[in-house]
Length: 325
Image 1 (spheres, rainbow, N blue to C red):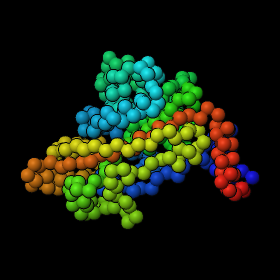
Image 2 (image 1 turned 90 degrees about the vertical axis):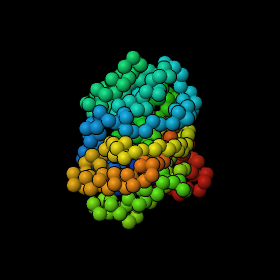
Image 3 (image 1 turned 45 degrees about the horizontal axis):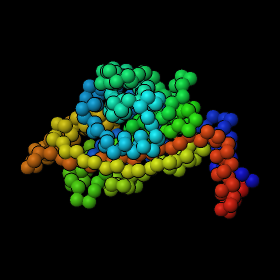
Image 4 (image 1 turned 180 degrees about the vertical axis):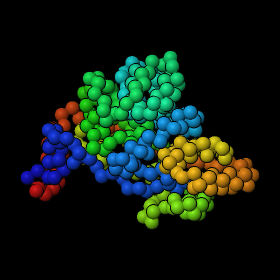
C-alpha cells in the first residue's frame, strides 16, 4: 500500500493542493517586534500583509541590505546567467531586486501594494525590471522563468497554493528560492533586546510561554520538510547567513515601523514602547543598538516529473521499511 505522504503527492497531481499544504506556523513572535506575527490564516495574513504598503516611503531606507554572499550563493547554485528570466514575489521597494537586476537578469516582480509598486519602479529605473501590481496567488501569465524567488515575502503567500504556483511558473529544471531576514542573538550580543522585554510585557505584547525567542546564528528553522512534503521540488541548498547593523534610536524606530505588527499596534502601546526605546538608548554612551540579522536561504529544483518523484519517494521508503496504509 502507498504511504500517506506519497499518496498525497500522487493525488496532488490531479487535485488542488489545499490538503497537501504544510501546517502554518504558530504565533511565536520575535522579542523586540513580537507584534510582527507569523501570518495566521486567511484574513489575518492578508490584513498584516497589507500594512507594508503604508511604509513605502521608508521601507527601502529602513530595511537592511541582504549580504552579497547570499546573492552569490543563489546565483552559483541555480547557475543563472545574465539575461535569464527571474520572477520575484512581493518585491516591496526592490530591496532584493536591485542586486539581481544590476547583474543583468531579466526580472519581473509582482507586488500587491500600490505605493510599494510606485517606489519599486522608481528604484529600478533603467535596469529593465518590470513591476506588476497584483498577488502571486492570481498570477496567470503563460511565461516560464529560470528562477522564482521571494525575499522576506514567502510567508505572506497563501500556503495552499504557493508551491504549486511557483512550480507552474518555472521552466523545466528551474529553481525556487526564498529567505527571510530575522533577528538572531549571538553569545555576547547586545543585551538591549532582553532588557526591553519588560516593556513589551507591560503593553500586552509579552512572549507566549512556549516561544523560543532567542535563536543563535545558525539556529533559525528551515522549511526543508515543507518543501519536500509537496512533492514538486527537490531541495538543493539550505544555508544560513548572518550579519550585523548598528542603529541609533531614530533609525531603529524607523526599522520597527516597517514590521507589520508595529504598524498595526495601537497608538498608546507604540508611544509607550518607542518612548522607552529612545530613553534607554540616549543613556548609552554611543546612543546606539547592535542588531544581528539572520537569513536562511532555501533553493529547490523543480521536479519536472512529480509522479516519478513520488514513486521514487515511495520505493525509497519501502526499502527503508515504511509501513503501508
